[in-house]
Amino acid sequence: MNAISKGLVLLQTAAANPTGQMVSTLVTFGLVFVVFYFLIIRPQNKKQKEAKKMIEAVKKGDKIVTIGGVHGTVHAVKEGTVVVKVDDDCKIEFSKSAVATVSASRVEEKPAEAAPEKAEEEKK
Image 1: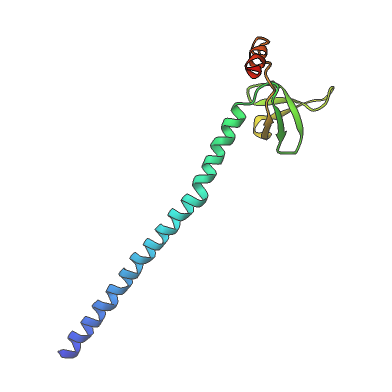
Image 2 (image 1 turned 120 degrees about the vertical axis):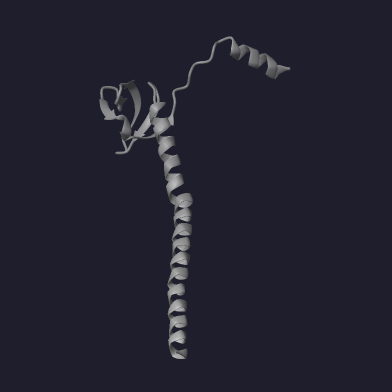
């Protein structure tokens, strides 16, 4: 009888260890997922949102670079496309998703009245 009870005790302790190992393995996988989320997934989502905002904000006169490396100025913006003026006589229509960067916007002219006021302030 004594041998049977010792065998049952050994079986119970052996059965308890795999459960403990499984829990620690699940916790480890959970921690790895959390690290991947904050180091890879979340920054990627931020970049996608910023790119989407940039593409939606493209307007006539902006200087852009496409994913193919074509530099030009936006001539017209349509629903899903952008017409880019590459040279004086060359206009190419691209998908909005082909815009990689907006390097500079056109400079809006300031009112002529604001310039003399600044000049007077600088003299004082």
